[in-house]
Length: 338
Image 1 (cartoon, one colour):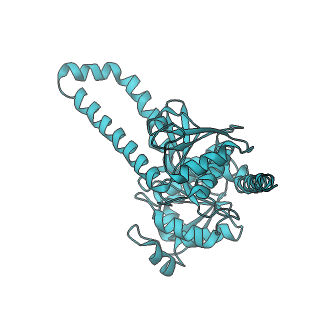
Image 2 (spheres, one colour; image 1 turned 45 degrees about the vertical axis):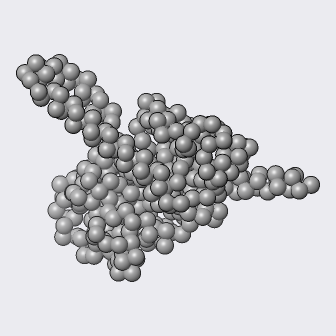
Image 3 (tube, one colour; image 1 turned 30 degrees about the horizontal axis):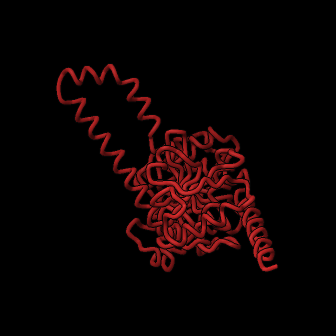
């Protein structure tokens, strides 16, 4: 029931996802009176949906603490509970981000070895796509948090993009080894020596995000969220510049007609619906946050992320990588002590 176009976009997204992933089944939690008429328009979902009724929904204005206390019978909480009980492989919601994060962490709990779950999402780049985390869950991070983000991000990219050894970069104020605060310096020193299935690139700068210099961009939630919003704002700015430029005269309008095929290709390339879905990594369960303003196509993309994570058993991969890293780190400590 969350999102600007709910529940239409949610049901429509489920229908598209069903076409992309035959055999996929859905547990829809929400107001039966609002959902049933929409379901009747999607014959492809007839045998693929179980509907659980609740009239309670988390509002976009609810604080996370308020949602935790008062939202136990909300559609969001009941869906997360279903994941915790093993009735569903994951939850996808376009609702209140803070409430979804708080509820998911409270119900699903953090994985062993993970101090703080992080928000991860794909961003379009010159080379294709890169995953970036954290995008706002943890404002301040130490070296252990950054290392955990790197391990989780690499496992996520191996799962979703199929890259056997993704490259990982630490976002910093410069590429030089002496740059950065104590946390990024310490994290880099440890990631250099890891034998995990990843390639540590080193430090990267803000412009490396759009270049696609690395497959995974690791940073704290403060810097990650600022960078993300700056990129989104710049994209909107240039879109406005283009619209203004092409509407200034009859000649520019004619130029737009000639350039329309290329403009459509560009629009398709940067369409946020094809990169929709923020994943809460580090939890004992799959929880995906869809953008609240997306449509059915964007929601289907977010569902696809959850499907890939479940199919490739991402949580087990992260757990195995964390155990391997801790064991390797302990061996190095013992060797140094000896």
